[in-house]
Image: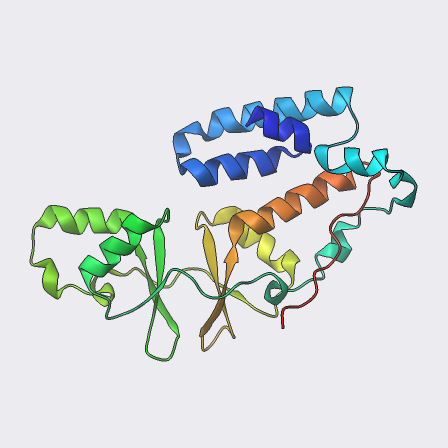
Amino acid sequence: CGVLAATTHSALLAIIMVFELSLNYSIMPALMVTSAVSTLVSRRFYSDSVYTADLDMVGLEDQRESSDLGASKEQSIGDWMSDPIYVIPQNTRFSEIVETFLQNPIEHLTVIDDEGGITGEVCLEDLKAWLKQGSDLEVVIAMDIMRPPPEFLTADARLSQALPLLLRNSNRYIPVVNNSSRKKIIGTLARGELLNYFSEAISRQSQPGIDIFKPRQPKK
């Protein structure tokens, strides 16, 4: 974690990546301290990160632009979302839900109705409670054990609108819907990827550097 933070000059990036791999909340305090110290020490001795060092070596340092975080946030969620993943119908059987969790390093599944609208969320910790009950799980479906719908984003929302949700939400993947009323799922946003983007952009804003965060081309 410390090595990653030092080489990238991005403490938040290192924290997110290590946590996403471990999903262990108990290591968070140590991750934060290690990443922060490593980043500060690295910047003290060397102004370039692993991203900008090679660019400087090939003579691109004169083509630097100001890091305008505001401009980067003009992109929309639709520019970043991928196809819907970790989504299950509300009539999915309990055994199938368990199998999905076993095969994927996730803790939440989004539940949808027949028309693709979000109706709820199944959490891994809830399955453990059901298993302890010892009831007949063959008749249990997602609708029986789901929680209220998770927080979501709309495809036309700006990145600046997404940041507060990303910071307070622990889900790895945030559902993206067509609109707030119908809530039909049309994509998935990788929380870690976008937090990484913000982390790098904020890190750049504090010092002159090449703007590697040029807006993405909208997906076709």
